[in-house]
Length: 427
Image (cartoon, rainbow, N blue to C red):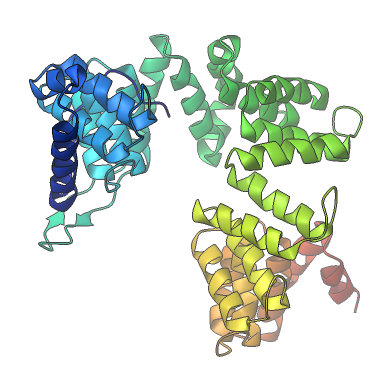
């Protein structure tokens, strides 16, 4: 999400605000011949926004300083600037130069929404998911969050799309695609929602359009067409498209296979900081494909991805700690990584955390805990978890015995290709 030279007001925590004020003052004393800063101090909103932009991006000889950028965005917002408010809200939503605060981000997006269509879009996305209540660290006071309003958010995005906002159709399509109930009811809307954004060359829309072609969502499926759209989005620099294209090239989907180019795409996307690519690059280091076998480099890739809260990376790190890859084996640390992945919703992490409970890996054995995590993983379609949950149900381990449900789960896992489930059914 890009900042704009048009923003909304935002509030800093007390300590952060004081540090920003002090830094701003020190900079002003050090450089008295700074017409832009002088104009900003005098209350010129345009100067405040321009100055904030220079600090945020490190332009025109100014050092990059997101804290000072947020400070001047706030000043512009206090002067009633919708642009200042919008940009401040962006900083608050992402924690750029200020402590991340979704409640205040929502408030400042709302302040800018009447004049900033992008603020309406960002506010609608926050409204769709809702924002939980928060507690002030200093005072312990409760701050009410924002209740989720899915219908209201979808309606807002629909109105924005009808008004010609390019990104609104893409975001609406994403929400529909990832919600099974909405997808069932509104699948035929998906491709038309993306048409304007695709025609405008929006990389994210082209990537999603390729996904719809690959899966036959909202129309016919065609792996060749999927690859065409991913090529276009990848050429425009979209790392997600690079990953989808890399998979197609690796396995020859929609055309000839080209594993070497697939690796280069992964490497490029990883260098851009895309977490899924960082994990895949780590796999390359472990496998020794196109790079030298380097467990330490693999672990570094997984750590980089986890720093962005990409939870499949925690599962990979758990595997490394369990097997002693890139360091000594440490079952307790492995269980901690699996637990982080499981709590983050990664199905493989949920399954492996369940196995830790089942086998007492890095913790005391707890079959009931294992069943809990196997159920979570199985609900997400994790095949091995289906098998293990089925075994627990048939044997009554950690759960009341239920041979009917257990057999059904084993059959589902076997039908999905799990060889161990097939062996168990054949006994």
